[in-house]
Amino acid sequence: MMKRQLPLLVLVFCLFSRGALIASTDEAEKRLKTAVNQVTEIAAHAPDRNALATGVKPTLQNILSFETMTRRAVGPGWRQFTPEQQKEAIGLFTTLIIRTYTAKFTPGELPSVTFKAASSPAPGRVEIPTTSSYKGSHYDVVYRLDESDGWRITDVVIEGVSMIANYRTQFDAEFKQGGAEAVIKALNRSLATSK
Amino acid sequence: MKINPIIVVCLFMMAAQSAIHASDAEKTAAVTVVKKANSPRVKSHDGKSVRLPDDDLNDEYGRAASVPDPIEPLNRGTFWVNHQIYRYIFRPVSRAYDTVVPSVVRKGVFNVFDNLEFPKRFVNDLLQWKLKSAGQESEKFMVNTVAGVGGVMKVSDRIPALADLPRPDTGQTFAKWGIGHGAYVVLPIFGPRSARDTVGLAGDIALSPVFWVSIWFPAVVWMPAVTTPDSVRTLHDRLGAYDAVTENTLDRYLAARSSYIQNRSKAASK
Image (cartoon, rainbow over all chains, first blue to last red; front, side, top):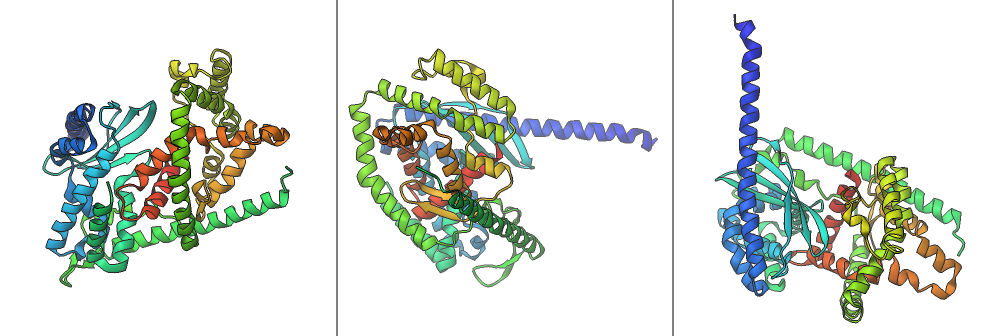
């Protein structure tokens, strides 16, 4: 009896898993689309870069997971940060990420974003590829989202360049030289000198 | 100009050797990951042994942009010189070009010389055995040359099948053949390259009709400075990309290296 029911159970399980996967990618995609629309709308009407950064900050805080981004950018060395150092690093990196993200836009110019089929490389993770058309050029942009406190972006990959992998290379060099203190000092230095 | 075949062979051997080292480095990286998975405990800030979280164990970010950089001090020096050249020479030249030459003319100049890079894309499509792309590339060249009046207008943009074709180059072909990045190098003016892509650059130049015309007719030797992919016609976009990569960073040099390697790895996977 059980033997006869096994294929049916497997089929039901597969259908259920597939349904859950589609539901989760749909939810992540919906959330990302809302955030991208909000950001592009703000970018289109912002008079200057400062207004743009201030305007998009609430949306970015709502959709980006700054804690995960900082942890992954630092890598395994994150465990050697004290809780205070972790908090400070997250705060500084948040400001840097917002600056980096808003630097990609010119106030008043509206990029058009085409969303492609999302994929789930692991449970609780979704990758959403898009094509952004901006100032006559096309860019492949992949948004990586994790499900923690809702779907949140943990990395943005532009033309194959991962924002987090890029910072990891830089954080690694600082961490090897002077541990958590060196990373925090470098973040402060970068924020003081960058636009 | 006569190209010495010995130099070409030497360059190729250097690239191949570097690629072998790179593939060794990739093996070492793989071993490191396995070791990490076997000993998933690290010391925390207070000296306690703690288990790494899953995303630290599946640490794709630690390996995403690794490349051997044996001449880093020299590369950093060249990078600094390039940065000054971009800042004090190229940026004013780019601004002047954008101001003096009307946008429509700039677009036309860009299109004409982009169209003339057809041999580079076509030959590399063939070398990568992408016969369909090679056919589409030929079709695009014909459409733009005939209907686009010598390539001034990019008519192919209005044909969906031809609008967004990949842009293969010789470095990418080497990657498809299994040759690794090799050592990272910063070339004067040209900027970041891997050993593989440096040899690839020589291949791209050899496939450029503009280069050969300027060699055969010394009176137009200035042409590559205006027309090639790394010339004034693309300066605006390239400086924009350089700024996007190097602004808001902790270390401009490392950011450029990481971005270059990741971007080229993606190009090789297409």
